[in-house]
Every structure is written in structure tokens, then in C-alpha cells.
Image (tube, rainbow, N blue to C red; front, side):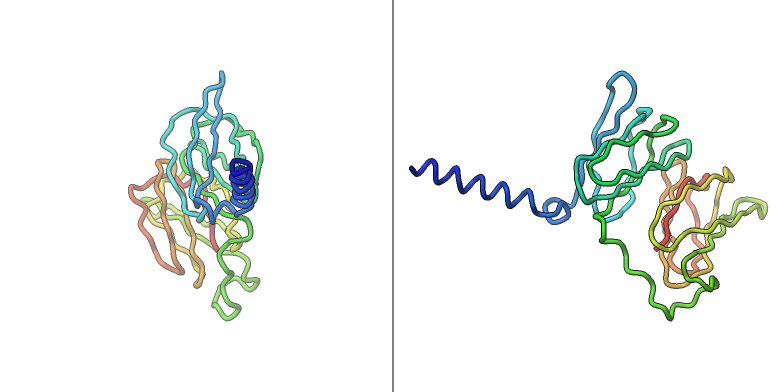
Length: 202
């Protein structure tokens, strides 16, 4: 009798625990990276939106998550950007080593800037970012202000990054694993200078 009662309590506890959102349980999601010939590895990614380095050099063909309610974005060494929403198996095209990743519980994104925030974009929905290299070489790319990750295709080696919009924070990932955060209209150094592969502003 006692054994069945204990078992019942354990089952009830397990059911309750499984219903708790992942960010309340362990703040991480386990991601599986799959390559050729069944080669694979797993890595735990925080669900707070922070960008983490992926050190395993395996050329990855697929990325899989078994956690509902979490969106993850992964950046490849050859500029791939792979988004995994919830429980999903997603192809990486073309297969390549992954260099950075970030995950966030869906619906927990950063609050948008208040309407009074000054911006040179009249819509308030876009952030213009200038990427500066050596000898005055530079280019500009526009990013949505909703936190969406965007691929950067220009191969210029970047030394500095600057935005023209107050009240936003942008994060940029470099091909050699740099992570550069630009707050507002700061001019921020990239160290060491390198090609940028993806960025996000919110």
C-alpha cells in the first residue's frame, strides 16, 4: 500500500515537473548536431538568448532539438544561419562547422524600445549598421529591431561596428568566433578584426 502511494506521488511529481517551462527548470536546452556517417555531438545552450561558442569542428548536416517552446539560431563557419523552432530537426545547407549558437524561450524576447526613442528610421522597425574595415573600407546593412538573426554576406574583415539608432542592442558574430555587442550609437571595436557572419538587434 505504501509502495503504491509513493509511486503515485512520484508519477504526479514527474508530470508536474515536465509541465514546467524549460527556462524555469534548468535554463538550458540540449541541442544535437549531426554530421555524416552518424557522427554527432550534443551541447547545452542557455535559453537566455546569450550567444555561445561551439568548439566542435564536426561538419554539421542537421541540427535537432527536443525541447518545445524554445527557438535557437546557429551560425556556421561558411555563413549559414540555421533556425530551430521547438522540437524540430533542421537541415544545415550546405553542411559546415557551426561556430556560435543562441536559444531563447519563445515569447520572452527583449521589450521593444519605447516610442519616444529617437531613430533615424521613421518606421522604427529597422536598424542601420555600419561595418568598418581597414583603409576606410566599409558597408552598411539593415537589421530588423525584433531580435531576428540575419545573415551577413559581405566578406570584408571588420575592425569596428556602429549603429545609428539609440535604444537598441545589437549582437554580431564573427567567422572566428568573435561576439561583438553594440549598444545604441556606440562605435565598438571587433577583436580581432574578422568577417562578420550574422547579427541581431532588439
